Length: 175
Image 1 (spheres, rainbow, N blue to C red):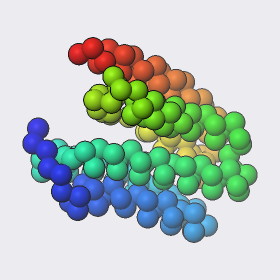
Image 2: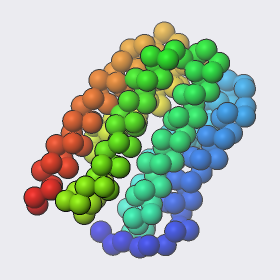
Image 3: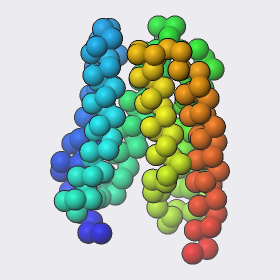
């Protein structure tokens, strides 16, 4: 796969748009607009990677921007729902578990010399957690009865993703 270090390309603009969507989500109060923002953000999460692969414009910056934009969007939505009483503290902790563990893992990997060279890559379990997070957040607005099962599933897969990332780092340290 060809790599480019251009910062201003279509995939990075799409990824960065999720930061704007996060601000918009906090600012709007109507359900239809919030549903639209969640759907557009979800679509943009898939679109940026597809564009990067198709146009051969993957970059280290884009590989960092995409998950950061995802996490900022999810955190903005979770904290908005938490502040409005639509999610409990338990829901927030469960939905953000994988993200917090990923952040801790990233800091560890960057501060432990023998882990620095290992690139962070998206993995299937992590992608599934992201899908489940968006589904749970969408269910807050459209089908609240599904929130508990979706949050529980997102948490369980988040634990699996955390273990998977940890094992990947452990395996690749000697590769």
